[in-house]
Image 1 (cartoon, rainbow, N blue to C red):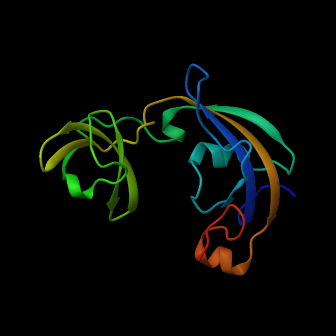
Image 2 (cartoon, one colour):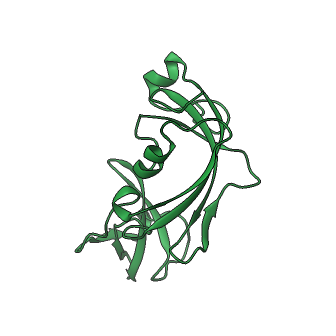
Image 3 (cartoon, rainbow, N blue to C red):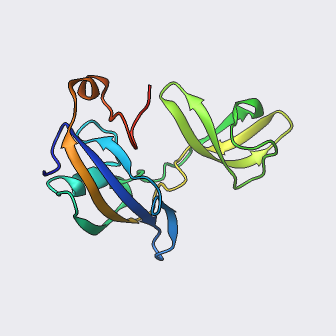
Length: 160
C-alpha cells in the first residue's frame, strides 16, 4: 500500500547532521506512527514519503526550509525560569521546553539570571541541512476517528 493522504504510516528513522553524526534515531525501538497529509510530520520528510510503500528504505537530505526552518534573527525572548521544563539548574546552551499557545516548544538557553532567562526561540535544529534515513514499516488506511482527530492512534501514535 502506497503512502497517500489519510494513511497511517509506521516508520523507523535516523536523523543525521551535516557531518553524518547521528542526532536522533528510533532504531531498535518501536516504529513511530503518524497520519500522512495532516501536518504531523516535518514537511520535507512527509513529501519524501509520499508514494512510498511498506518495506521501502531510503535516505533524503533536506534543506532547513523543509525541516525546522531557517534561523530567525532577533528570536530572543526573556522567560521566567519557572516556565522552563527539563532541568533544575539552567546553563547557557541547554535545551529547554516551554509551553506556548501553540503547544510545547524547544528553546535554547542563552543567558541565566536569578528569576529570568533569555532564550533563543529558534528550534535547536533550525538553519541546518539534515539527512534522514527512513524505513517504511507499515502503511494502512486511517480510521474515521483518526482522520477526525488529525493524528494516528495505537502503536507508535497518540494515546487518549
